Image (cartoon, rainbow, N blue to C red; front, side, top):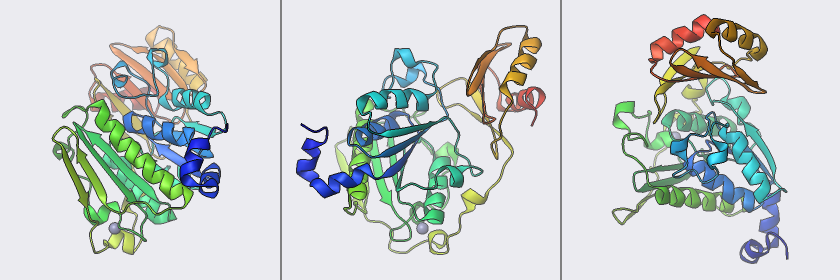
Length: 332
Ligand SMILES: [Zn+2]
């Protein structure tokens, strides 16, 4: 019996065959992204691009279903691609270990039939919304926090956009994160499975739900919110402020871990062999180099440098000190 026999009974032969021709990007391969990517790969979506900037950490394993102990310390995008290739070798999988920024989002996210939000932050979501407005690509908002799941399929200008509901990203102090509110695995599963279902509709030729769906699974609540009746000026006039923004070197604290991430915009290629020499002589210890990253210890901090210019500094370091470390060692 064919791999897709059971879904073909439901979708019909033609709609099922359409899935083989579709190209989808999953942005973020954490908790929600793991489940979304699993459903789409197993359903036989033709091309899946898996985008994530992070490495697998032990605190991920409670809810990030694509990973296990043997993946600790590996880039998530690559570990996810390995697991999904085993689940369905027919799918063309492209892992990208990169940080989505205004400098690269348009380039990285062009040429897809659908963009799936597997991120955990509004910076990425407002970028996705801008890419959708600029390129006409549909995207699906997907979030889980505490016991709550939220999903919203968007395809501006045919539908509302994220900014029609929320003009600006919320202040970081106002946003619950997995760090402040915690999150339960099954809430993630519901959000991501709902988003994957909407994706299967859209990719096989059926219109997705237009409402913003919110479940609070812990408090037994369900809401279907109608999208705003009027369009905001951003999607109406195709104003893409987040894509147009530019910054050079940005440091942010890591969610859930002691440490700082540094990113450079626009991304640039680092000369990892040369940096390896420099860092080994600076620290007097061995640095490990892989095709896309360089890793070692400097003082109290465990440091990973990526070939696209990004750096993760795990340890008791402040964002300001991390920026100066980067400028000093890597050059900014
Ligand atoms: Zn709008």
